[in-house]
Image 1 (cartoon, helix red, strand yellow):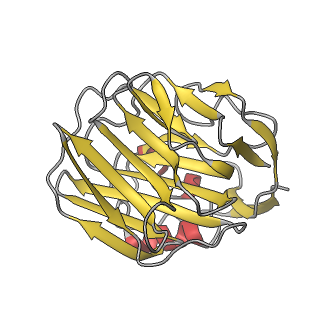
Image 2 (cartoon, rainbow, N blue to C red):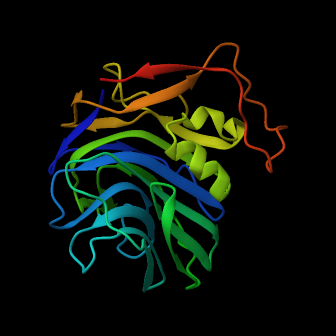
Image 3 (cartoon, one colour):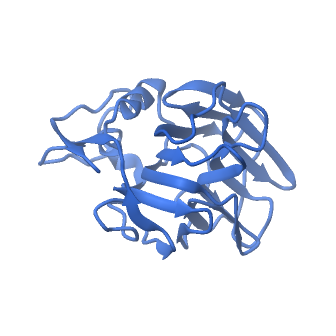
Length: 241
């Protein structure tokens, strides 16, 4: 299962799981319609308007790309993928922020778009799934399904993104650097496998999800794994549906 979002619902944790580059945000999503700017994952200053990072389906602009957006100090910029997701189908969105002036947006592990505007948000204090939280309110609310949300405090490589796009769980990829891993399945909408507890604001556990490969026990989580290698322990296949 994955979380079903209805355009008014979201999951929110009262902490910023990352506060500066580098980081990577990743999730699987199935958007109902390409009709508006709809955020899948965001980290922001909940009381301000101009300090945030988010990945979204930008159905409000030409080409309907997946957008990796940042804002700080009154400036904002975005990296847009070179292709659009299809509505009503599962896709993977990834925001890689290597540095404050180096961000990339990926769709299904490729179709990359880049931006080099120097932006370093400050005072971020909330992590939201299915929306973007600023000035105490949720915007860009998502309609559709979201699952396998993962955030790392490192910039993943394209080889690592290819492994995620092939259906491998985020637990295979630099597990010691994961700060959030929330599959959003099995009836558990608020407590992720890794990361802070989320408050559920109307999300239901009722959406089908593509098959994901999960690690077999025992599982390694130490940070000593060479970051230049893809972590490939044994696995088991589980269809979340």
